[in-house]
Amino acid sequence: MLDATGLLCPLPVLKARKRLQALATGEILTMRADDPAAVVDVPHFCAEAGHELVSTTADGPVQIYVIRKT
Image (tube, rainbow, N blue to C red; front, side, top):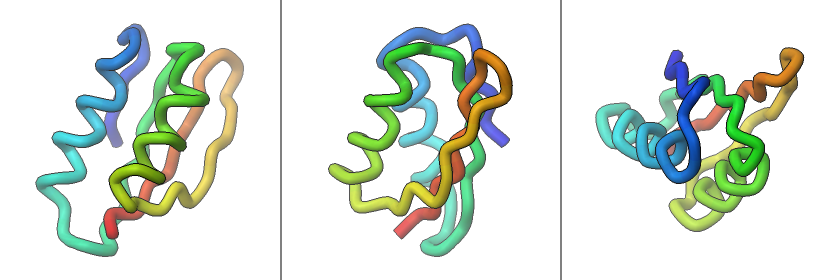
């Protein structure tokens, strides 16, 4: 679990990128973020980097992203 709450763009995506580099292909990263820009930035990052955005859910003001490394 990567907790990126309280961080503003581009830090949630930069931290996700770094954490994903340490994972093996097929492993899952779950990230929490409350930056309003993350709803655009995270899906864009996944599309550009080729990772699968498995799901996006909201827990109040916090978005929860599940990303599979590809």
